[in-house]
Length: 69
Image (tube, rainbow, N blue to C red):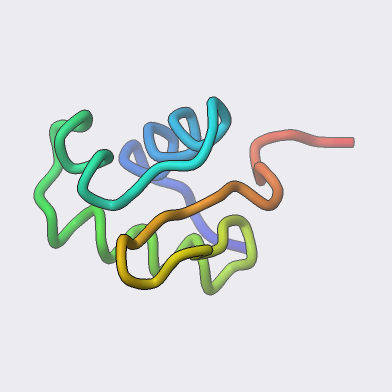
């Protein structure tokens, strides 16, 4: 389980609305490109999101860790 930070919540909010590229998230969120990249890697490693297109760095939500059953 990942300790979610503010950037993670913002990324997950955007991915709940649909697929997003890393570049789109950088443009929309007030975080550096490096920080967004790192958080996407962490969320992906945890199995919450997946990169569905490597060239464009397009991500999709698999499961939102903030939602409890």
